[in-house]
Amino acid sequence: MTVELRDYQQNIISDAREALKTHRRVLIQAPTGAGKTVLASFMAQNAAKRGRRVFFVCHRRELIDQTSRTFNACDIEHGYIAAGYPRSNLMHVQIASVDTLKNRLESVLTPDIVIWDEAHHLAAGGWTRVYQHYNRAFHVGLSATPERLDGRGLDDKFDALIPGPSVSWLMENGFLANYRLFSIPGVDMTGARTVAGDFSARDSERAMDKAKIVGDIVRHWRKYASDKITIGFAVSIRHSQAIVERFKAAGIPAAHLDGDTKKEQRRRTLQALACGELQVVWNVGLFGEGYDLASNAGIDVSIGCVIDAAPTQSLSRYLQRCGRALRPQESKAVILDHAGNALRHGLPCEERTWTLEGRDVQDKNSENSEPVRQCPECFAVHKPFPQCPECGHQYVIEVREDPNEVDAELEEVDPIAMRRAAKIEQGRASTLRQLISLGQSRGYRNPVAWARHVYNARVAKRMA
Image (tube, rainbow, N blue to C red; front, side, top):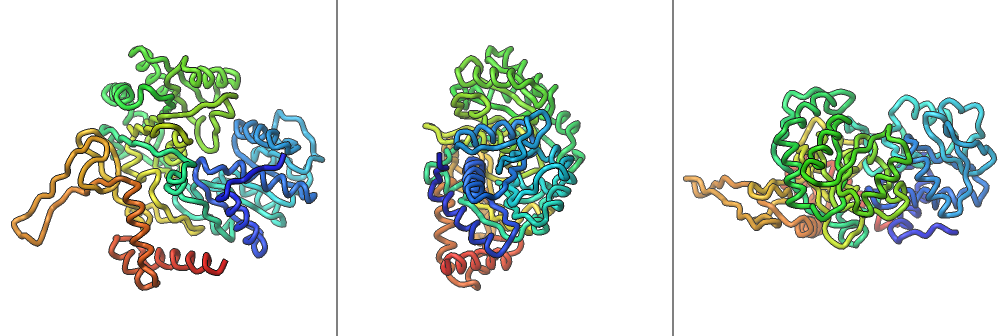
């Protein structure tokens, strides 16, 4: 069976092939839900047909099984380099656990191509060891958020970045669902410590483990998403189990899963969620990067709501969570943000310019950020607009004594209308100088760098 690609996926493959003519290390960026495993399947299948040896490297056991199911569906014969899995070294395609591979470097055949799943982890010690060992291979990275947790780039690992379509484009073209996002006030992370680049788990649990916040989670789910299949993200196992008990006490069927839950129990729980026996499943460290709930449940699971109750400084983790609910569906998805992550990182559909150089996370007003506001009436979070698109609340502009000055709330906007207006405005800036001026008017931290990136992308597209 030949892997079938969508048009935008074919464009990504074509761009990657072109880049690999002059570079050995290419990073593909594509949002959650854009089909990175499909891209990997296509690359592996075509390389194997030409007699090339391919390693697909991932970092979690769940992703090994998940990728194997996808490869099997595409009739891609493969072996495993992972503890507890049968060895078959002669297969041209190998699905490898990075933790096992780093210990078998001398006992397995050398690959021609290494495909790195969730390639932003390449800074980790074990990953780097494997990466450096195969320094003569071609390296293709896959990531929705191609930067390290601290915002630093991956220019020391890759030579070229192939950007995929934006989240907003995928929504507008029906490949991802649109959404409603509500960020509920209450969490205060002031003074929380940072450990390994993110909020301390203990401080996060302390901030979220309050009766009012837990009660609001149940109440707001009933208000906005009681008819939707829901998954929740908690700070810790204890925190997750406590929230599950509150849902059960309110008569709402709920369950908890984590990385230590046995595989068969996970499967039964997800099937119960898909069949309506459960309405909400909370998790810790499981439904994260690359996790396909439908594949792991064995049946179709369309997640309609995500509840985020785990504060994070990681843009990647935030976008991965939101992405769980953005698979195409009949109605808008609902994202209930009880952790303040939307106000911290922006909207999931925000236009973000990814580069190999990364970004400065110390500057919260980076050139890629766009203003968001929270409605004081319904807590919806969205772009500037004269009224809330959810409840119709009108924002008041207060006029100062000086008629030339106004003190105004940031206005809210329909995200789709805002994106279209921004694209039109950007399209009208036809020269580099005009783009720099536009970046300055938008308040970008580095308007010159932003303008050059946009201008160079236009030039490259015209020359293609």
